[in-house]
Amino acid sequence: MTEEETKHDHAEEAYEHQDLSAQGIYAFLVSLLVGGVIVYFVVWGMYRFMDARIKQHEPPPNPLVQRTETDTRVVAPDEIKKFPEPRLEKNERIEINDFRLQEEQRLNSYGWVDEKGGVVHIPIDRAMQLLAQQGLPTTPRAGTVPASEVNVVTQAAQRSDTSNEPAKTKAQKPKP
Image 1: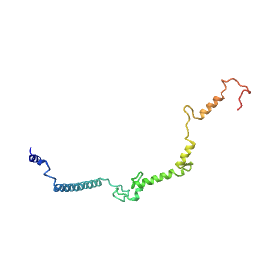
Image 2: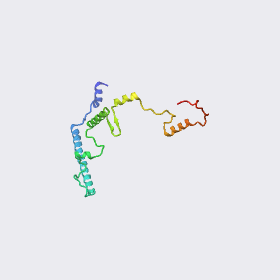
Image 3: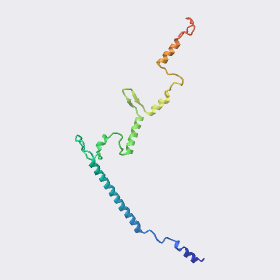
């Protein structure tokens, strides 16, 4: 094959003869925008229809109840405190920083927990020092019975029981 024949065989495959036109792209974007606007108004109309239908089918309010507002979804800022806890947060960062600051102050200060009962809280560093000096309270070893009135009385009775022992004379008794 000659060079010219090779060029002619591949000439059709060298590039794409038909590109996407700018008009086609613009038509697609305009139709997408128009479609989005249509969907917006359809959804908006559907919500208005459903809201009107719900208002029609609501039972009449009790005449003893005084309503200041007809729409219960609107809440005034001073009414927010009337809602029970937990409430939605307005600004997470500021509220969490305030909470952490309060916790940090409580961990590093002295104060009353129950003043009548005489219970206080102390700074965490001081509590760790006391714990290192005094240690944790321990529990009785396994197999030992904690002291109770019944056990104390039983042990005292066993010590004073002399029925199985031989009689001791006054000279043999140990002095307390």
